[in-house]
Length: 220
Image 1 (cartoon, rainbow, N blue to C red):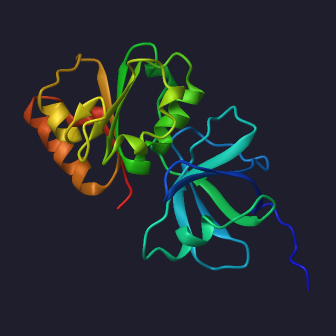
Image 2 (image 1 turned 180 degrees about the horizontal axis):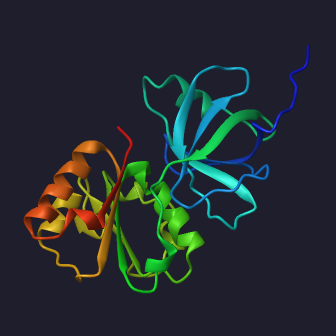
């Protein structure tokens, strides 16, 4: 019996591989409306395993994208990496409140701090809000993981590489933050692993930056 197409059925349009284990899945938008920074729940059609992924595309894009890192023991991520154009996904959402207040775009600076694929919602921010005064601080192992850095304005993307010296800064995100100062009107957005987020927030709090200007999206 053939599966019935529903409004939760999306079709893969393209898969772009950035590294051996990291790739973007582009699918049809299927009429979905979302706010930059929100996430969706994704699974392969007919498979009950799902996972949450931040939306990697902008609000005005005609397609929907997610950024995926394949993990060794990850049941779903490995299967997602083997998808082909035309394959079907179940997608639910959007959901989440890791978003930008548009009224603050002309009055605040935005420090976007992510690790690994935690950069996904920040690309959505940048593509959606053309006048955003932003800096992306990206914690990665090697410069190879500086996914699509060419789309960001010169000087607004800073790669912090901990295992090679090819990045803009050699060391961890927290090492960079330790020696940096920010304007009083800066808002801090964190996305990625919980250890990085906790350490970075504690460091900034110790330097006097208030927590009501910090927003988080924890991946694991």
